[in-house]
Length: 231
Image (cartoon, rainbow, N blue to C red; front, side):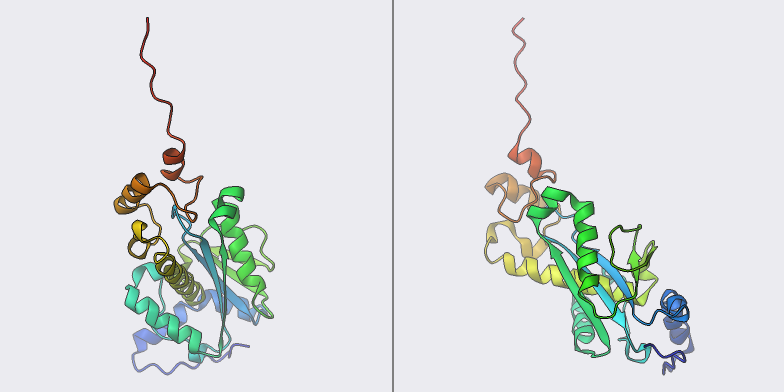
């Protein structure tokens, strides 16, 4: 259960204040009696290849939260990996990650797949009681929740989840790139870049491409050629 005193040894008062501000949402739930409050975020929702990944993170001791946590998009790849290792190595940090495959994304759509990944990640955490979720409200979570727009930059728990989700997915895409080197997944991580689109146009989609996403859908099912006017 998080310490109510939250004594954080910071030599810089401004950093100390900023730290407490980024725990404001967690503190609201702690004060309401929820000891295990998870931050939840996803990565890969807008990609045209690979899974969507969600992570959930609980801080059980505010004294031991690694410094530097922020929205993963605001961090360099090197800093994200550094913070990932710190989060995974800290025993007081509880975490879980879940994936939903491209096949299931195509079957149930990306919104429901994202919700499923978040719900699965939360269900893998012991004693979870409440969730702080980045973005819009999510259906089907196993615990009460609060959605926070741009939460990955406003909550340390959500920021940590964004880092774990992003780095987990990046590592997956780097590994899968060894099987499909022609697509350069290690560079664009499955996002819809010019390099990626050109590769799909040249080689066609591979098994991890999302068939219902553009431009994969149109490459697989090109519109009918315009018939000449015979009259």
